[in-house]
Structure formats: structure tokens, C-alpha cells
Amino acid sequence: VAIVEMADRILPLYDKALTDPVAKWLERHGVELHLGARAGGFGDGKLSITTRDGEPMQLAADKVLVTVGRRPRTKRWGLENMGLAMEGPFVKVDARCATAMKNVWAVGDLTGEPMLAHKGSAQGEIVAEIIAGKDRVFDPVTIAAVCFTEPEIVSAGLGPQDVEGRDDVIQAVFPLAAIGRALAIEAGEDGGFVRVIAGKDDHRLLGVQAVGQHVAELSNSFAQMLEMGAVLEDVAGVIHVHPTLGEAFHEASLRALGHAIHI
Image 1 (cartoon, helix red, strand yellow):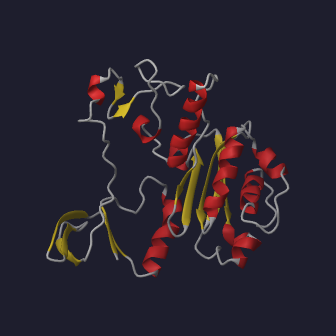
Image 2: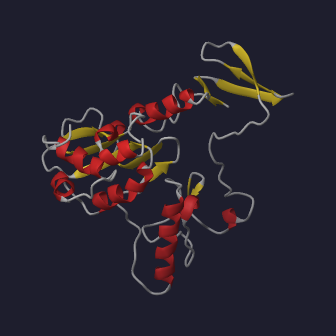
């Protein structure tokens, strides 16, 4: 298996600290990474690419999976005749998922980023309740995202790239290797961690990220704390079950406050 990526590293929408463990896993399992490269034509069992150095190269391949993104299907089926307001390729909606056309709502990928299944489901539930006469709005603090790689990546709220250059935030990282549950299931050997980002003055949680085996199961806890406007002391004050991976969230919050226990 070979991966051809035009960017300088894989999964460039995530920060490097999150993607490094994934890159190491791929290399350790024999996956070729051609970074900074461009894919060309495919034929006769060979994929033509241009390397980072501008050199032509051919890769033997039985199949090629193109994963450069998604193309919206918002044209050629009458959408332009419905009087809907658009934002680029997406249908513009308000906080109630209502479009510019009376009694027409839109949910899911059609409404733009983030294009995630759980976002679309939540919007759909709200629209169903609005149609049934309820007063609802779609206004989440955050929508957590999971990249189901090996190891998994979770991101909720603001990341390091969003707060770069700011002196009013604090960040803390806690390695999974210091968590008993991670060691028991051999999930602490890939450089995984949980990271918290919070306001320096009020300690309000601004973002949480994680990378490691099975960390997708932590995503709802991250989103819940952000949605509730939790501060670091709230997370640190919750007695987390031992041994679980969730203890890394607890310890990362403690570390941001200056008194982690197991590191």
C-alpha cells in the first residue's frame, strides 16, 4: 500500500503532533508515504506521480483510491429554481436550519462544514421538532470529529493552530503511556496523548484533542465538557473511573493546573 499526499505530511488539517503517531504506524506496517507529491495518470497497473523533488516516478498499483475530497451535488436537479440562498456550493440556513424558501429546511452536508454524520442527524432531529411545533435552534458550542485511523484522532473545539500566537491560553498534554488502562491494552506505545487548551485567566475549556488507540470513545466526554462551558477544575474535580482511558483527560486538566498526579 502506498499513500500519495500533496501536502508535506498526512492529514494536514490536523496538527503535526496528532498526525505523527499515525505516520509512524503506517511506516511501521509497511505503508509507503510519498509526501509533497502529486498524482498523475493511472494505467497498465502503474500510477504516475511527481515527487517532492520534481522527479517523475511510477508506482505499481492494482487499484487507486482517490480521496481528495467531496464534490457537492447541488446542481442540475432543480435547486437553482427553488429560490434558495446559497453560500458557495452549500445551501444557506439560519439557526433553525431554515432556508430562504418558506417551509423548506436543509440539514447535513448540504449546509456546509463540518460535514459529519452526527451533525446532520442532530440537525434532522431539530427540524423534525420544529415542524412538530417546538421552538428549537441548532447552536452547538462544538461538534467533535474523529479520524478513524490507526491510532485514532479526536478533535473538539479549538486546536493549537486556532490559538497560535495568543498569550491568554494554556495548553497541557498528558501521555497515554502514563495511564494504566492504555498500558493494559497496549495503547500507550504509539505516542498517544490527550491535550487540553483553556483560557489562562478563567480556565474555561476551549479545546481538547487526543490521539491513540480507542480514543474515539473519549470524544463525547470532550464535547460534553465543552458544551457545558466547563473549566479545568470541573474536569479535574470529576472522579474518573480507574483504570480507563478517560483518566488521561483528567490528568491533562490537572497538568494544566500545575499538579498532575501520574507524571
